[in-house]
Length: 303
Image 1: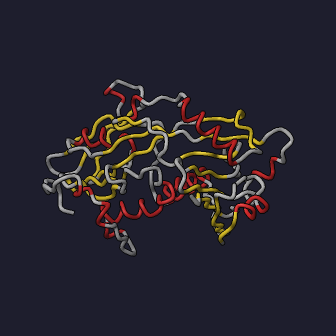
Image 2: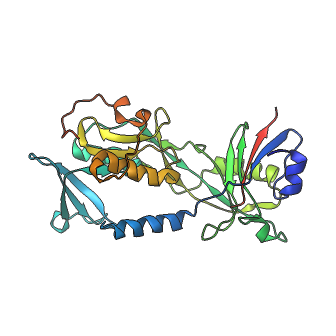
Image 3: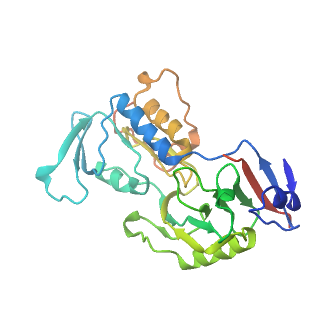
């Protein structure tokens, strides 16, 4: 539904648009409860025989002369090789986000052209005297702003989530690095100031001074497309990464795609992996391995 600024302001008084803006309202939009979804994934994995190891890192991955891999696991800060646990497997699935290239180096494979960005989502509380319930899911829509200098988006306060209205810029806080090891958890002061100014402009009932700021990592590919496929230098290594901040909502498909690539005989129905996601667009093929809510509001500038 197309809405004028006046209609938006009347229907959703939490927002404030001017006559220079208009919106598209999508009533069947909403959000996914991330923590609940992750817990459901864990439970489904356990029920299907998976062993989940938390606070555990891969210290080394060895390609075996006879095929397959030996993976040495340990606690993150344990330097002793004597306390490592070794797992022998036929294939390795790498879904390690910003650490993907570190894992590929362990296996002796060429790395991928990715950069890591340290994004900064923020959560703003209502001003004193405002009805807090008006900023919760069901009363307030998800919002996405297009056509502005910075394209902000956000969600209302949701069940089990952070307190406050989320406000962020998708791929907008360009603290870039090659590896996440050097990341900071401190605020980006300029981004904070810009976001506070934006909140004052479009959400005057939120208190721009009462907020919490977080940092999270995006894995950005050179062409902004996902990476899902077998590594051309060793097709027993399946890689899923480079989701550019959009991977979570595709997690069920990504999991099925990885099974399709590594163990197609286990799939009741084949999963198609788009050709533009393959690693071969970055890595020449050598074949050295084994063959094998409350709706959405989209606001836009009319200028």
